[in-house]
Length: 318
Picture 1 (cartoon, one colour):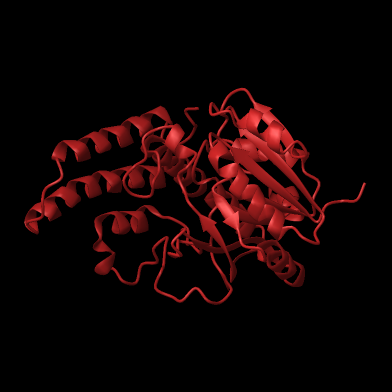
Picture 2 (cartoon, rainbow, N blue to C red; picture 1 turned 180 degrees about the horizontal axis):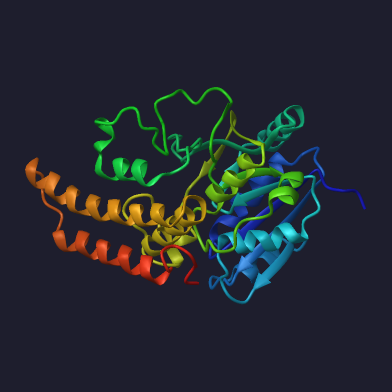
């Protein structure tokens, strides 16, 4: 059996309404390539499995009886894939017709590129963060409070000021389009299964760069990314970043503890607490309509409870 050029790895969780659009875009982008497509359904409750079986019987379908999270589900797909390259693609991310051809050609001509991401846009063409730097407790604090205006020398996670028109190395790329060499996964391993949702690609890119590979942002094609579709069915989305707060906090703490130690995780909790006190005070000083202090105090409590439940960011809760 011919080895595929590329394995497309899809994790579906209650996004049956997006699958026709997803596969239509994928079909247009796959011309001339030998592909395999694996879709893991993460215990959807919207009829996704029946929909896939009836409309896409040739797709290799993996069914989970429980939702094991994004990173663990992708690891299941990775273990069954055969392609020389692996593309982790969200079900709410829609390829341009040239996306696969161009990105694979770039990887072939740049042998030290271990992970590649592309230009991400919303449906209206608005640029989304596509080329990112590693988080630290300090740069997250500055972004949360708006104090980055006073500390212009600090590199934030997202730098949207440049034109995004040229390929460039970066720290990490979002997991909605995550093109990686099989050789890289064999060397550094798959996603850390401790992350249920969020930060798994940040952590993986850190391992990839630590092993001497490059992580590259590639601008010459685009992917339309909706964002937050699977998360909607798991819990209430936060106002900023469309993330589920409890999972985002847990993954953030796990990341800092694993990669920077216990004191880094503690510093993150302290700075989140400080930010939640500074933000309503700043709004009051500026005469803006106040946001209830109770909301911020509740967030502080959630952060500290998560810190305790994860044993200072040492272990996951699910």
